[in-house]
Image (cartoon, rainbow, N blue to C red; front, side, top):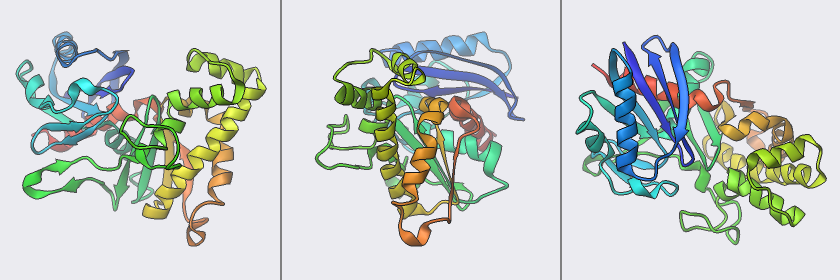
Length: 300
């Protein structure tokens, strides 16, 4: 059997066809539409182009109540807020539809394809347009069941505050990790340091490869910010392993080692040396693999 697997982000939507053996036969992406109707129409067209699909799995960047099919809050794609996403898609597609938070699915994908025979407690932090992630606790995806109030997505790691007087976040709080370690955050830091704007991430990364002093100083500060956020996660969960994924993880040569060194001085003293930190193996494909696993776990 085959599943259409989508990972919806604020900037683009990654999608793949993945079999029940977790074999990927196609992978691509398109720009995130500007309305729910346009998103649903695109998903419908992908279903029509594919053959022998058994289900559709979707990762969405927001707090989703899977029991009541209600998107509670998605700060970076506001058009889905308050909507019954599964029902809206189900009206157009006669296939089972399974939906979960995108960070949770990325964690699920990375864990089941690379870690489930190695560790039982695991955290994935995704660095992209925003900052997300998910946690595996005792071999199970960390979510919360609230009875009649629904099954609600948890682990909004991007909204740990690392500076309560810091930058304003789209969620309404100040100093969230996302405002420093997402793509817009790193570009903002570069502007603060250099007094100049990089028009996009590609331009900034090109400056870093050219050893531009301001770009390298930006990554130095980025490591400081990231280590603060990760230290909070370690102090709360003490996972056996933490992995860094998402689009910014492709450029780990500029910040990863420095982040690890800073992290080891910031975590609770009793926890030092009791966890590992690595770059995710699946990079930007973790979410679609997680969507396939979601389908496998729920499709009957």
